[in-house]
Length: 381
Image (cartoon, rainbow, N blue to C red; front, top):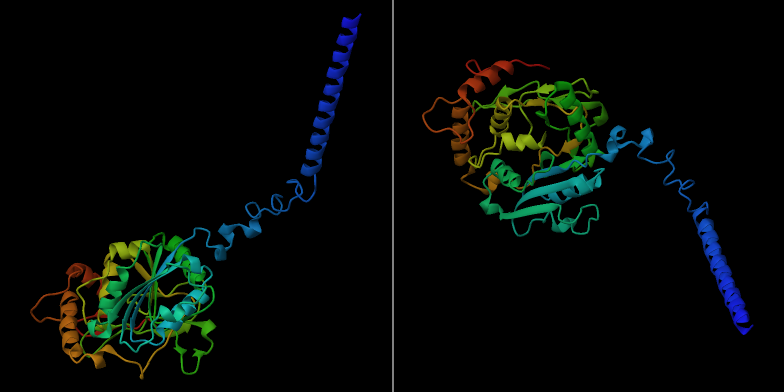
């Protein structure tokens, strides 16, 4: 009898234990259901995962339709050659402040200063718009400077294979969204001409530092290199003229770049590298690089709208040709060498390192409507 009682007690204990286990499990299950069905955390009602509001499915926020998102994360390297220029710090500040994507912009700066000149990097040390490790500076004494063309070559050596290469001067100002707009224009013309070899370049409109003023009605104009000319040294210089701003697919075709604003894809630097053998060159730099671009198959266009502005004149600012008494002599010598390479100087002597072929030089002049024998250039304005 005692055995039966023990068995019954054991069975009752087991049943009670099972009851408590089941009760706890159900309670936990219910709690889980309550948590996962809370509207504040339920994926079915969470706006962050609602397909109707998900940026990945909403056409209005699709990066492919919104250029400001820079969906391909395309980077820009900005080449700046600065010679004792107090405007350099503001140029760097302005280009970052006005960019949609400062995190995608890298600057390579060649700073050629006297001890008393403003340092472009230090002046921007507290600018939160400049990402860490995005500003690469090579400092030289102004007494080591060998002219703007050589400085631009040195700046190109700081280039780290970013998607685009932008060359500017150290005294520039920018409109908001300039980076997004330049990339957008490049891709429009890339598709229109069915080639990656598109370069956007011109002499930008003016920004007057003393008056703190852009060109009047700047939003209505850009410039076109339609009025090139021979200078007194028989070098063809770009002649840019104000023209109405346009909307692509319209375009202004140029044949000679402006070094103050030269924007091209990665392959531009690869196929037409900057020449290390052009110390003290001034006039002739733009023509030589333009012919080389042409011979490599590039098309030079003006930006359809003016996005970057240049401070012209700068009478009171230091210049290398006044600081360096040997500049004029050395400039004449290198200009002669460029002229020989471009069939403009018949004197005996060497040309330049990256000289295009004579056949291609002649083809360039023919297409650009330049008569080197009679020193005439047909205007296209």
